[in-house]
Length: 500
Image (cartoon, rainbow, N blue to C red; front, side, top):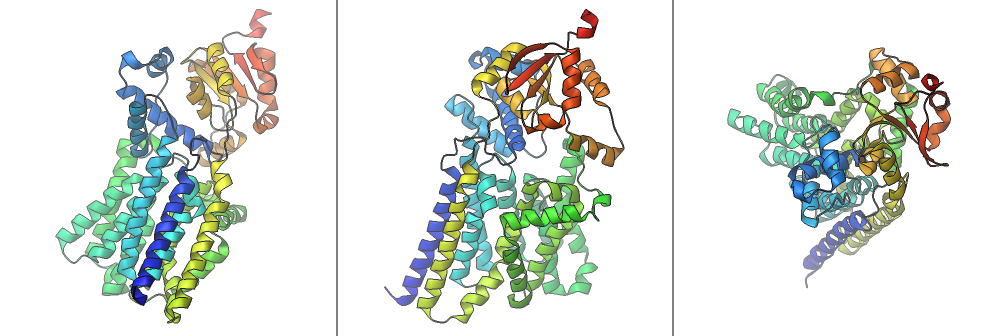
């Protein structure tokens, strides 16, 4: 075997190992569901999958509880095209029951497809095989990537779709003809629908960088093709948000929080936790110093696009850690100039191979260290206790839930139409965003008017800060079922004051 053939063999082996290792970290013991990472979002996706599953399941095969649930319980709102949920529902139908962890296999397959597309992208940007191994390895073993792949989230599809869109931009270049512009803009816009609007700014930043390299800054800013691409990329997401699912519009941008130093510090904390601030600074330095003139603006455009996304969604980007996933594909690609500069300095194949193996070892250890966090289980009650709650309230009943996951686990496990009792943070957000504020008595009366029959309290750390409403409930409504230190159920249909 010649020296060059041996190099290619080692590089291919490293890529294969890191892809397989990263995939294994995702599916290993994935039946331990849900994990502790944003449990509410996991249950929300599982509830959407249940809605689809019960729709396609014949009535003759539904249990009595499932029949009541499908008739009486409100369907879970949809915020993006429910691709993950639909695939999971079809898998449920094939195996004959609900197994939410099956979504992990789909997410892992999608992530591996993203690795293939990323390999293509690196091939367009660099001729060095070592770079492909390093970039794909970082992508496959990123701690945040492993965690979100195990948690029934739309982010794996969002990231892979973005990589496809970016590959189209790089493969076909900056458009000079209308046919090219329209096809590219529509294709990218449809790909961004995986999670409407999230990857728009990084993609448009990359497109702008490609345009600057081709035409120059002044010509790009007045070029109608540039504006047309941005509009076409935005349009599908805009239609989805405004027309198909207008109920998904939530508070994301709060200008009064832009000067809040604590929120900026919290955002930096998320980046440090999942990527490391040192890594981010080295990547940025690599882009500025080591990237080729042809692609430097593309790298900078993506990074700037991510920062614009953070500003546009400042409240959620700075308070919801999973928003940091938007940076993952951007960072993977922007790692390329630094890696390319390192390997281009060393002409000796042996030392280059040793360097690549060291990087592979680092990525392997990085993925292994996140194992326990990604496999941690976060159940609040046992199946038996959730069943007791269902029996006490009645399957399909409308209840108010005080939990730490917006009552999603209560709705899922107990088959109840459970609605969330707002936390103090929810109330503060409503006041900041809309100036709305209701006392707990008025809020409880509103739930009762809307049909709530029971108030279910699941004992969590949250209970300590909710003593006012708990004392009010204890003095006004009877407890129909409870388990010490676990849960309590108040019957809102019976007023103790009236009985006196």
